[in-house]
Image (spheres, rainbow over the protein chains, first blue to last red):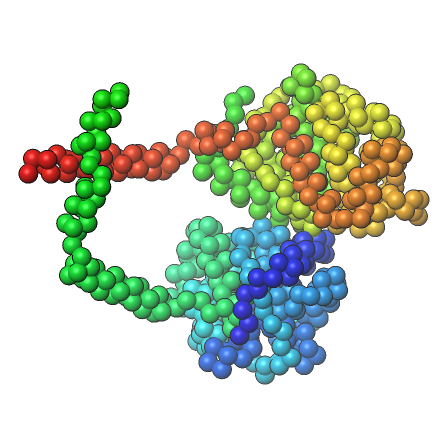
Length: 302
Length: 288
């Protein structure tokens, strides 16, 4: 596992690459395919075997030619323009930075980006990314394998607010929302709308989000409250972009740490009660600082 | 018109408008004209009479039909889409925010943006913006009148890294650089290179080379993009705040936030309790 990088030179290059990506993505209007590139590089993660994940492996011929990655060569080539100007930064960081910038320039939330991912030559086997023709159980299989949750599944699906499907790529066609270059919560509104424009796309895996009751709760929340969607999306996108890179503190480990701290404090205060009395402390304090004397001196001076 | 109250609600709207502007500008590839709108609203400032400046007055027909503003109705209409979604924010803030976002999405530096400008319907007379056909003395007349400096003049001219001139608008034609949607220092590199096929150099651009004071900055920015970005961000911020006092002190004063008051009250109560309790503790000790 790589570690977050503190080298100032590297961080400067990242900032310059970020600016280059903003210009590139805006002028080429390619935010959707850049987001998909970042997602498909990261989404191969297997939490048990610690293989796959955001490591730039997607640029290699084998992986790029997986059916699920059809069309992504365009994004890889665009990123190459930025890599040329900033050769120091890893492809793994570059692709995740591109994903973050894609969300930003289309009006989405600001996603925290931590650099330091290492590149890998090892490509995972085909089949780790979700199949659009499947349902809720399949989505859980795929995302739980990565170490993500139900909330992550629904929030990340909101990425379909951007872009469209292409017959020559996935075989599907069309955009999910009316403004496919604007990042907002309209994906969820369309999902819940039985009378949405028939031209708009709804994959089987999209419909699964309203058919499954647990998923549906989140769909309804995000359709109603765009701020909640942006907040959860930013958290889930960050998690996805850091799979296998930074392990998020699990709830269990936080509880253990807190319990440990409380135990230490309890033991120490017991020790101090026995060997050290508060009365001693306060009488020493009053020997040094006689407050009533001080007060009367102060009054005399005034 | 009154100053807007810059409370948490207003700041939230500004953030949302910022995101909407990013999406709009990226979608329509209209960063150059948005930057020009912000510049032309602000650039009418007269520091001695304190008139003009970034106050949204450019949205009035009398002002946007000035010769210098030819074509800007497009940008005004784009901004209207964002204003419709966030009616609370002033046009003055909206146009300056659009300028800041235009620089950001084209790869330029991050410019600090402080909201709180008020709108005005008083529009200045024509002639306060620079004439492209003139030279260095004219540039100094115009910019010194705003309260800006030689460094500001050269740094801000770097805004020509974006966009192009149009025959039906200014009468001139073409972009200044090979990538008119990328914010970088190529404007200065091209200036020093001399005549280039298909690229524009206005008389006012060439004036930056002919004048020795200006030329110093042109050479610095051509050589050092970081220096250009740093000075540009500073000058752009200055321009966007002409006649506006956005000191953090003022915005603190304007924040009539109930949570801030509540926190202050709690702090005072705690301090008072500590003082009173220690007094009583002392008194009891004395009585023993």
